Amino acid sequence: MGLLRSMNVGTVVADATKAKRENRPVFVAQIADSPRPRGMSSALPTMSEMIEGVEAVGWTLDTLTAAGFSNEDRPVALAVFRANRQPVMRS
Image 1 (tube, rainbow, N blue to C red):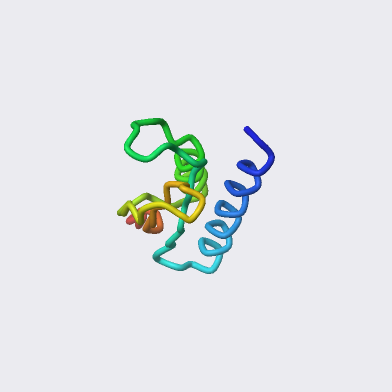
Image 2: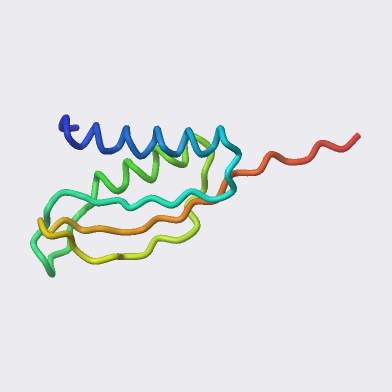
């Protein structure tokens, strides 16, 4: 993973971790990937790693909405995550 990509993933995961510690029920992230030629199908590894990282700290992806492309032709999406709830233990 490239340094910039690693930093971007790390930033989103750190923000998700902070939101989880604050017991927030929803976490929304704007996520972007490397520039891609428009109209071509391709993998989006940075977006995948961001989603995996956020889910690893206790969130579940609820909605992913394509927001289009940035000025640098980077695919951009808004991801809405919901906090994983611990099951209530009954005796």
